[in-house]
Image (cartoon, rainbow, N blue to C red):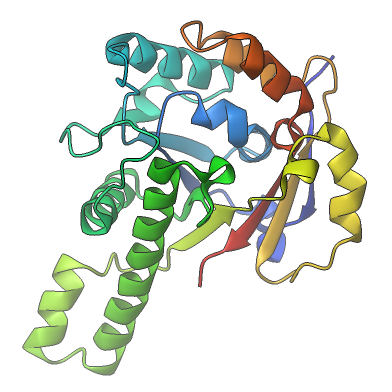
Length: 258
C-alpha cells in the first residue's frame, strides 16, 4: 500500500512553505517508533529533514551497530544519510534512570540548530512518551533553548545598540524565529489503541493555534514497520506489538513550546 500522511491542523498553512525540520531524539529507533507520522508528513511536502541523536544507545555495547541502524532507518523514511547526526561529546549516556544535564542538552540543541539552519525543532514532551529519563531530559533542554532564544531576541530588539545586546546576539540569538514542538504523551489506554485513537483525537479540544496533528494512513503494515525492521538489534517481540498497537505509528499530536 502506498504510504500516505494527512494533517488535521498545520501551523498557518505551513505545508506551502519549505522549511528545515530538526528532530532531536535520544536513541536510535526513537525516530520511527514515535515520530513516523510527522516525519512522513514533512518529507511528503518536500521539507529538508534532519535527525540528531544524543545517545547511540550503547547501554549494552551495541552503540556502533545502532548508529548504522538509525542511518538505514532514516534512509528508509526518505531522510538523507548526510542529514543524520550523532552527538560526539559522550555527555549523554543511555539509561532509563539517567538524567542528562539540561544546560548540556540546550547547548547541543543550539549547536545543531545552527548547523542545520533549522526552522522547526521537534522532540519529546515533559513526560517523554514512555517516562524515559533521557527523553524527558531532551524536553527540558529544548524548553530552556526556546526560552533563552526568546529572551535573546527580546534583548536584541529592545537594546540593539548596546554592546551587551551585541554579545547576546552573537552567542545566543540565531537571528530568526525558531519554533519548537513537543510530541504529546497520552494515557496508556490511548497509547495502545492504535488507529482507533484518530477519531478520539479529532473529538478532543486542542488549541488550533499551537497544535499540529499528523496522521499516517497506512494500516498494514503501519508506516513505522519498514524503518523499524532496520533496527535488527532492537526488533524483539514487544516492539512488534508496539509498532502495530501504538497510536504513535498512526498519529502524532505536536504542541508548540512557547
